[in-house]
View 1 (cartoon, rainbow, N blue to C red):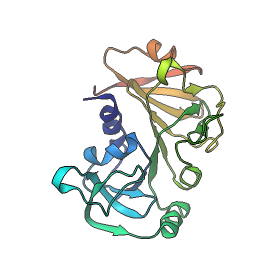
View 2: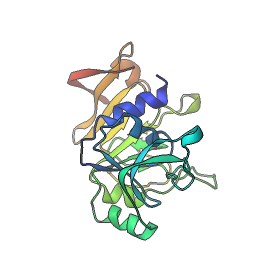
View 3: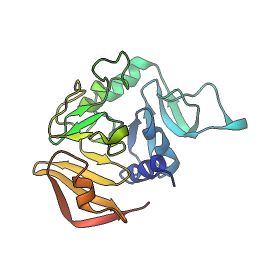
Length: 214
């Protein structure tokens, strides 16, 4: 299993039947392939009931997610306009949102929409991180070249303050808690010390540290 699908599969373990979950662009869009059929995925461009990505003869041009990828709607899916979609987000009806990140701070601050000096970012998620009761970040632990993405404080423009709950990476899972960043899952062959060297804040290792499927 490649890194992106490994992360998406672990993220999907957070969801239960009946949840309505928003998926951001990129890796989050892979989650429906690994989720319980009772989970309903939301895309802010106007649909609840996002299914797996469609390919070949099964492609349906009428249905695209936030990434512009075509998908198969699930039985019982509901389509609506953008205004109603964001009303769902802002009214707190989502169970969670899954987003990518450029940076995450130890207190849960999130930067995911713009890099200084760049014209285009990853897309704003201010409504999502404010309206969803749980914010899950799906990302690689470090940026290209080894640049750290989990920092003591974000240096990029913020999307939201103290909003992140879980950070799922290809090497393990880190929870943002009141006592600090807690490593809860780790890939076999990787040590907590390996992960600690790749982030700025101090890392707390959970007493019941679990092995994450690789």
